[in-house]
Length: 186
Image (cartoon, rainbow, N blue to C red; front, side, top):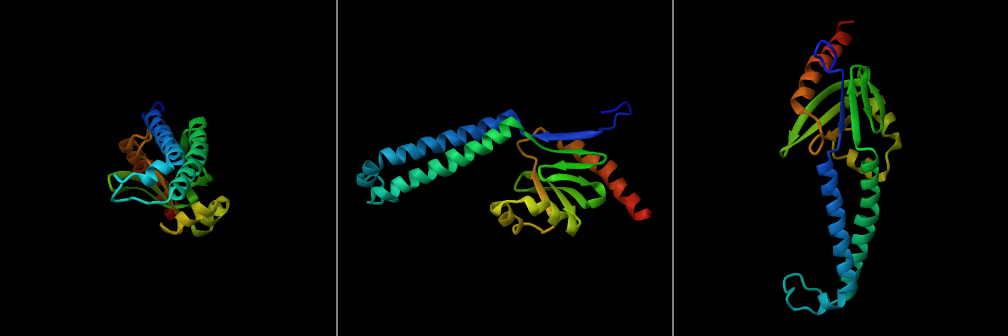
């Protein structure tokens, strides 16, 4: 906040609680994967698994190795990235500093908060050319996720972050939308 009481900048990052939950999830799936690998024969011969019982221990080993590969390796890399830099994005009067890069408010057609299933998302609708330029550095999985939303919209979850939703909403309404109305007037 500056002297006039207006918020100049929002830094949105993951909370320690969220990082701990991510770490515990990685730990759980790593232990489950190790259990499936080392006790595959016992799981295959156990008749107590009557509903989901498979006779082949190879299937249990494959599930265990998949769990180790996916959750332990990739999850740990993501966790280390989040732990090293928990900052998701920064919003100020000039624009938004996103993981993909800096976006000026002149490139933003609309910005709003969206509530889906009890979770709040910050959505930025960009001009078509700018959205494609930002998404140029996306990996294959991120490009796949783009098909699940509007092509020119970037979404950022605010659940599990330190964002004060009410202050962010008033900042968007007061400062950002006033800048976009100034663009239209010119």
